[in-house]
Length: 122
Image (cartoon, rainbow, N blue to C red; front, side, top):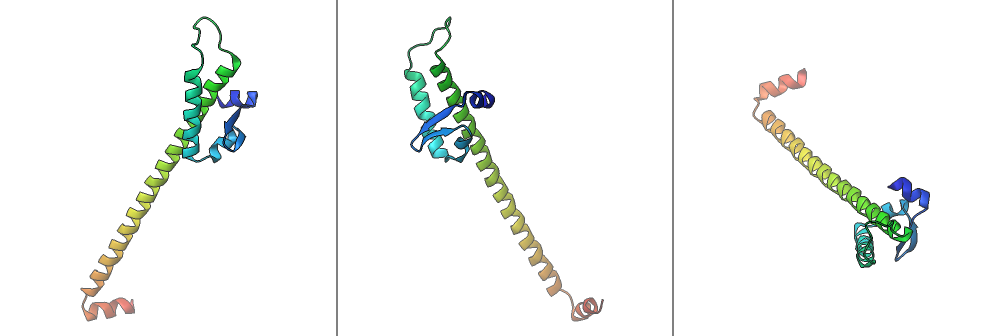
């Protein structure tokens, strides 16, 4: 679908003007959602389609635009989820490292003076 959009030099009408398919990735999820709603409304308000005749080019392009916007939204949602998952893993790993350091400190505190001196000499 992206290849078709590039070949057609498909543009998307936004509040920032006409943008390219590549520019969609620079939009926020909220702006993409607004664009998807607008395209969905435009498609649903179009005259009823014929199942035996080909759609006008503009209607085909709107369907393509809508599919692309939905795909970009899904890509961005997955990236956001992956970033959240990564942040949670990093926070967990940090907490584990803190606990390890605490237990190492406790283990040292429980050693006798002789054991500690021996550790310094080695």
